Length: 289
Image (cartoon, rainbow, N blue to C red; front, side, top):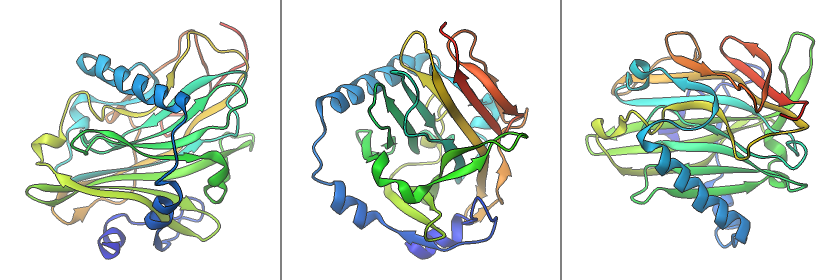
């Protein structure tokens, strides 16, 4: 399976741009977290998360950022692979609860999200697998265990850098009835792309296409009515690969052009700070709304 991953993901280091090795750390992660109990707050969050996704299934998700254009959303045939840096500070701000959520267009791919829990609670990186028979959270990684994956990225012309975590989320055709989800993180300590999760499951090409599931590219999902003192959050260097024929992939292409996505702006909860149309957008809320 490692050879398959190496052949498909075009593992370029997000800082140097050079090809780097793939390292599989699934077993290590499973051993560390397999028996980790969920606290009551996390259980409640997961229940609320699934309810929000169900409620929005008839329309669209409540979020600020980038959504796939309807025609572009389902234009892949045999796979889609999203990669992005997510701004990932240890605290989001003053008692702020929100998610930063990403999907790769496919209906059964993995949703990667950063969960900010408010107060002095550190955030978590979570993976929700829509390809499971019963979709579920498959990883919840605490901030303190992600030091090797967090590194500064310059996010505006003034040279300001912010701590980011760079992920990849691929959904790939295996055969006529099987697909595979793969989630990776860029490890700057080892100069590798680390596979943190992968799973195969039954699916067809048609089942991977849905107007709602996988429609949000990179968004901030508010979980409260207003924000005050919210620090810098957002996304940078968003790119996508597409597979239009079996075994053939494009190189990394800038995702957010006018034909690929549309941007929704935050009218009264969170302020845009810096945009590079349309590969980068950073938010904050210095004032109370």
